[in-house]
Length: 544
Image (cartoon, rainbow, N blue to C red; front, side):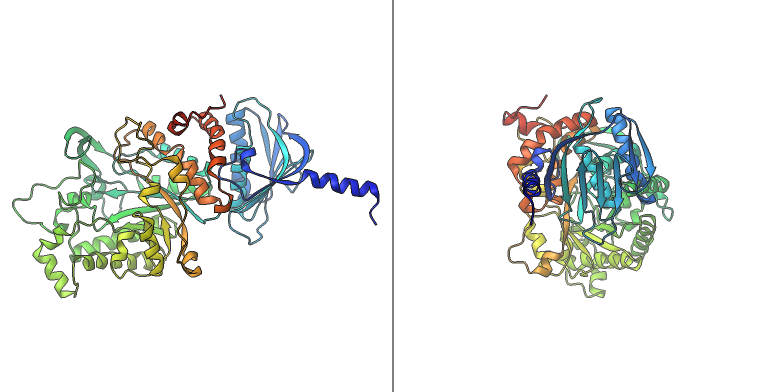
């Protein structure tokens, strides 16, 4: 039997162990479980040490060390060692549990231990620990004795950046990837080609960037409108692509390239005019890259179904597959202006010879061809949700940008789906009606992003298992500067983070609002430009 002294101790410890909300610690995204395990406070020494259990965790250890030094001013020694050798210990359990899962144990006076189910889990644990740090330099970090147990709800947590309409240098692409890492996002969708430019070097077709990366100017305001002369030319070399891919991989982020076909191809047609359905017609002016946004029916931007075009598609997609190690390659497949195929006798003849009933079937023919090229390289093709209009292979992943019901349709047809509905996740839309900046129709409020729920009603378990993730998209037609880009991205990226990572039962809009007050202080610390419209409109007081 237990004596009275031991029983009293057990009761006392039990009183100290109770679940908490991340609201108490302002952690975004909301962890699976936080438990307070003691009443003491652990203070990180001014000069402290970080240990890592294996070589693969050295980057995470140095990442944490650099973050604390750059933002708080405290130095640390990074060492390879075993558990409890240092003030902060990073350990890969390699236990086969949910990828990306982790545990943080803060135990005074022994220190902090981050255990990950894998290397990525350790890195995500580091991101959570960063959110427990002060937001002012020279403030000594103090931590409650808590245990955090966490894992991602979704394995695909994505963010698209369009660099076609407005180019961003590699230095800023890296900063953008850092923003993703701080929010536990893990797929960077890089939109590299469109009507306005081709922004990736192709060794097989160097003319694509020599000619196709240039445009003469751009529209002022919305269509129809005025145009301004603004010579614009830029692209990424393959060495720069590899540099970005490696930088992202260190932060457990996979880079997915997108080459948009068979529509959105004015940059291709400016480079190779004979790829157009109306090539050879005298009345057609010289082809140029687009100077406006959203061109579908006003100018020809679709590829003709010719042997040369299909050979071209094979060349560029094989090259892209070899350049990017990602398992996914995005081929667009959306918004094909079918009238150009309808008006082309040669295209109609091709359709007749290949028993294609209509232009939707021709679009599917292009998509199926490219999907097979991508598959032959050991990759998985992703396309926008228009591709389900045809009999597209079930191997292709559907990225749902229309209403979520279209994503449900794709699930019911047997496809894997990423939900990226413009209704919830197009961050180029204004956040509030009070914004004076020119931009796409809106508003798309912080609350609407946060309250997105993945559809589940009427789906079988197998169909639910085919939901691989959620993605937001940042199209840059009206975002010509990094200042404006960040203003449209933050704070909605924080809502996206919790939508992607946290289980539905752990989410709370009221708690998230409270956490966001502190999150703005982190934004200030990180030097981020952001929109605090929600808090101004709702009279929520900032902490400083």
